[in-house]
Amino acid sequence: MKLLDGKKVAAEIKEELKRKIVEEKEKTGKIPGLGIIQIGHNEAASVYVQSQIKGSKALGIQAFLYAFEDDVKEEVVLQKIEELNQTEKIDGIILQLPLPEQISRSHILQAIDVNKDVDGFKTENMGRLHLGEEGFNPCTPEGVITLLKKYDIEIAGKNVTIIGRSNIVGKPMLGLFVNHDATVTICNSLTKNLKEHTLKADIIVVAVGKEKFLTADMVQEGAIVVDVGINRTVTGKIVGDVEFEEVSKKTSYITPVPGGVGSMTVAMLFQNIWKAFIKNRRIVND
Image 1 (tube, rainbow, N blue to C red):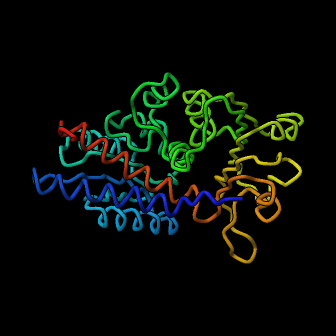
Image 2 (cartoon, helix red, strand yellow):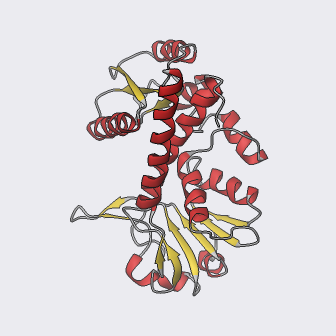
Image 3 (spheres, rainbow, N blue to C red):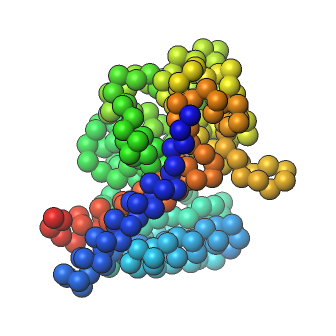
């Protein structure tokens, strides 16, 4: 068994991005800009936002936080997004969850300029993904594919089973694997005989948000297991959706939690910001 070390790969990607950003600043004086929309005072969200700002700064990306009170009207937020769509120094816009009841996530996401949708959640970018066209892919699925490629894992022709069909992970993950010529099965809570689908899989991606959901009897020898889940145990330990100790004995590769997909998700966000910067500022990228 080998670990798919997302933390290590993510660090390498971020170091390369930092080098490119420094070079671009020296050549043109321009740096990428990220606009973060946060509504309300959710403590966990605030911690995450600050980590995004810190991570951006470390790479030379300028992050701008646009914070609103819980009772803000949706049209006020939409006005700000329209303003950011027209602001040259902002290359990417992300929406921090959770949102208060009066704010429609869909309305906000669809208002973001498609060329600044660095989370890749806008309908147009999702459509581009499934058609195999250029756009911004959601960061977690893109991180999974990038991690597999970094370890020279062949995807074409492989049987892939995805457990979980969310718009954030499962559905875009399906599209990316199809684009890489895999044979893909996507499962949900109503799937019958789930074990039957996982046992035939060369690659399993699990994203259901349930501790120890994938057990060793569901995995064939030599399979590759990608754990997207993040759960907190009663003792406060962070674990994934996979029963790691037993499943890892049967796998050829497996992602740890933490230190796997989560690290890659963050790296892909920064990579999307860089792509947006290059496109929006019409910079020739050598």
